[in-house]
Image 1 (cartoon, rainbow, N blue to C red):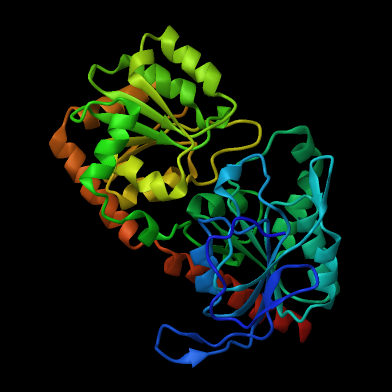
Image 2 (cartoon, rainbow, N blue to C red; image 1 turned 90 degrees about the vertical axis):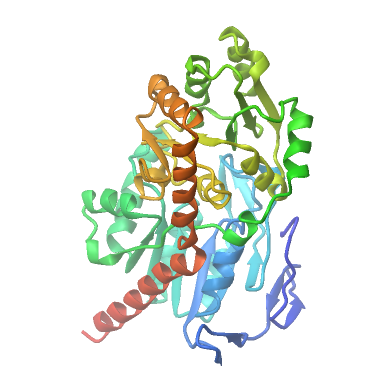
Length: 425
């Protein structure tokens, strides 16, 4: 069921379905980029876990071009998601499907029913969902509909489950009519696995820039500094996100202890299972007084954290569950003109958003010395910091949902065209 929705459905004809979720009765006429109202004839079943605050604008933008119905198979309780972010809704047709969890797998029987009997021309499915992924692929094939896969995975996953089930992912990668990927780094990985490059389409991972580039008032940043106990003129190194092993925060603490900017503060904004261990480590390194654990940062407050910071650091590392698929906090930080230091295990770096020397620095993962050097360069050189800040704003200005959706459009159009050609033979 849906929960904590931030945006109402505005343009569709609302009714309450039997399952207790909102949906559109009919396709909705929407404004197109050329100023004409239209209803596309292509009907897309978009299957993904849930609508996060990141994806509302993406889903709304895609719905401008196709008659999309979103089928959400999760309530937002995935291990990698901060539950306090909640799940969302938007100006699009959707359903949150009920289900049960068994052995860590979300089972949603209604998904098969929806796909097998719904009026769809193409099925688009994200990579996650141990039940939902094969179910969506099977339904598409039984209905003889083109299947489009969306993925951000760019490394081999080395858990017992993923090793045992890798043949499923390999098969779907190879047999999907088209694959949409977060960036060129994912495309390179899939090509190395034998996927035909012409079937892969880049949808550069984006956020709703308008939600993060707002002007932050000085009293907002000063108020946040006062709450955290940080002097008004002290440099701030920021991390915002989950406090978990994959984020490599132990290396960031070690790096911060090595920099010669002794008046600087490190702010770790977020919650997670590593917080107690990180606090203990900060004390051991002699920097406990200059490391501030800010706790969970509500979405609407995030721009204030970025505006307060001199540099943002995303020190993620490779773990058995893979690499950081993207790191949308990079997009967020760039919208406030904050330079970013990211490791080479971060998708936003491998995918070309973080550009070394242009809007930040890319350093090797698990390398505290390299992190310390990059942080010191930015904090000790105001001119460099300003140049990187300008570069961040220039880069993110065109890295938006409209560009992202063009990748989806190209993939859907390609999948339908080639599927029709195969059907005629």
